[in-house]
Image (cartoon, rainbow, N blue to C red; front, side, top):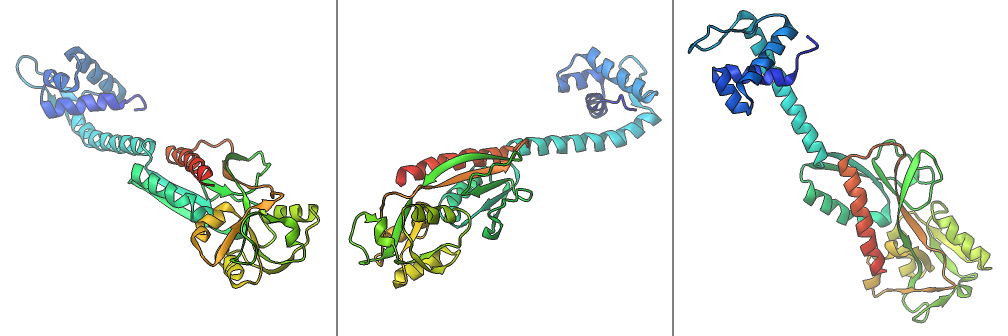
Length: 301
């Protein structure tokens, strides 16, 4: 039975439906001799005849064994068609995609990415996970793709660089004159900031290396909380452009945004995925779109 082929079962079903080998050949685009060869191969595989062939103008008739094969052939062919449809749907981008994200990406790049994916693949299912507590030791076991703002040197993780995300100073309007602000003006000044994880330590190390020692009077992982305290005048904040743009700061009349002199090295945004794993067509397309959207964002900086 291991030698039974689906094409032979399909030929058998066509003969049953059409009533003759000739009509089955026309339906399938085969020669009549090919139909005969398929039926003969099927009968060899099951070690029994499926048709009685009376000859002449009389049609072939199913044998008792042929009736058994007919019952199971229909089920097997239907399952094969179902698998074929599922495979074609998968290749076309159907299925589930889970993306790990964080605040700055969730409010800027990610909405555009999700919209484009849903436009291209209406049948796909997208799940998003934003858990900043996991950052510092990224876990890709539950996601297909992960947006991250640190380069991870791990043989089990591949990465795509998306963009450099430059830092700016955000302060209550009037706190600093318009234009660039010297880092020296921040020495001893009150500042509000993110917790000292992810890319934040690099910012504070850059300040220390320049001899700048601000007073951190408030820390929060929420961009809005940090900006609210800056807006209230508690302290200024050094934030990357994506966080500033995503929070609508550029149109906020209560806040001002300033370039820094000397500049603080930008945060770098990456897209991570598991190494030595084949991405699904949907995940591969998402990675390509993320790269394209990041290029557009760079032009806006």
